[in-house]
Length: 328
Image 1 (cartoon, rainbow, N blue to C red):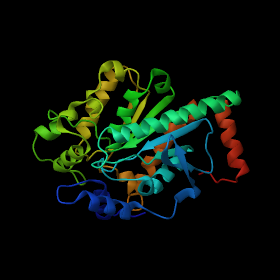
Image 2 (cartoon, one colour):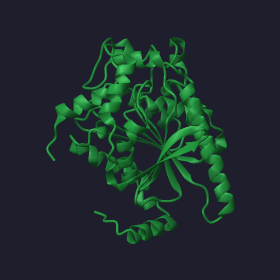
Image 3 (tube, helix red, strand yellow):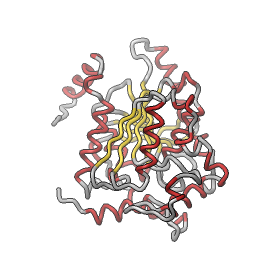
Image 4 (cartoon, rainbow, N blue to C red):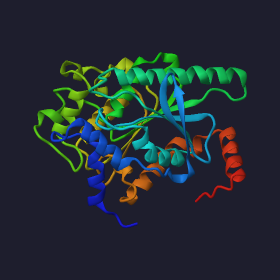
C-alpha cells in the first residue's frame, strides 16, 4: 500500500485533546472519526456486563482459550469508548489470536479520578471471580492468563489499577502491552519544564489540559496518576512489559525513563521503537503500512511461538483446521 502520512496525522490528531476544542466537541469528533460499523478480520463482538460495567467482548476466529487481553483505551482521559476503539481492538485481537475485553469506564470531567480506575477494578475482580469458578468446575481448563493492554492516557489508568490489585490477582496478569503510553504528569517532568513542545500529534498544552481534566494538580505527582513515579517495591511485582511507540513521539524520553526504572527493578521490558512513526500510528492502518507490521509484532510477542506450551499449540492447530482459517 502507498502511505498517506498527511491523512494519518489528521486522523490521529482527533485522539488528542488540544487547547482550542471543547471537551464535548472533542469526544464527538473522536467518535465520528474512529467508529466503524464494520469489524475487521471476522472478529465477533458481543456486549458483556462485568462487575456492573458494560464491556465489548471480542473473539477472533482462532484464539487460545487460556489467554485474554483486557484493553484500557486512551483518548486524552476525557474521550474514547468501546465503539471508537472496536476496529483497532478487533485487529489487535486477531493479530494476537486472543480474546479481548474492552471496558466502558467512566470519563472525566463528569467523573474524575478515581472513577475510571474504580470501574476497571470492578471489571477485573469480577473477571477473576468468574474465572476462578469456571476453573473450579473444570480442573483441566486451569485459570486464564490475563494480558493487560493500554494506549496513551490509558496507561495511567492501567498502572493505577495494577497498584490497587492484591498480589494474588496481580500474579494472574502475565504481560502488559503499552502503545505510546503517557507516563509522567508531574511538574518536574522534562516535557513540562522545557516549555512548549510538540510532535505531529501531541502538544505540551494538550497533555497538560488532559491531565487537568482528569484530576486536581496536586495529584499529578501521585504514582496512581504518573506511573514513572511508582515506588520500586510496586515495580518489582510487575510482569514483563512490551512498549511499542514511534521514534518521533514527544514522550519518548518518558518511555525510556520508565524502561530504566523497570530494568533497575529486574522487570523484563521490551521497547519497540518504530522508525519515523508518530504517536498511536497503529490506529491509522488504512494510511500506514507500518501499522500492520507493528501490530503483527505485538501479536507475535503475545503468542510467543517459542513459549507456547504443547496444549496451546495443539488447540490452535485444531481451531485453524476446523474453521479452514488461512494462515500466511
